[in-house]
Length: 145
Image (cartoon, rainbow, N blue to C red; front, side):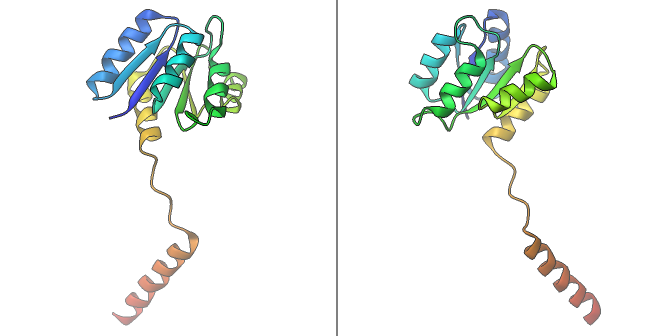
């Protein structure tokens, strides 16, 4: 179970996402503007922040940067909810501190995969030494058989 903060101006989007994410067993908090969203992030220390980038006042990229530079909440993982899927928008989001991006309209299945990946990162790949060692052992066994 993760604590997820949704920050977006679109109340219908917040309601829809909250309902679907809560059904997956996560706790959801929300805010409809940037200042309230940043205050909520500081108060709740969420595991994941879903933030729209086009917010009145503090925009989503400013919020992402503020979260990643705040020692109390910088471990929060951030997914920017982009209105445009341009390379420039994605690059700006990632350079502002976002861990991933998702282009609106929301593809819920894909978004949940992104959330899951940030909650439970994939195990590290085997080092080249481990692979070589296993391959050599396997080859040795084959020769002996």
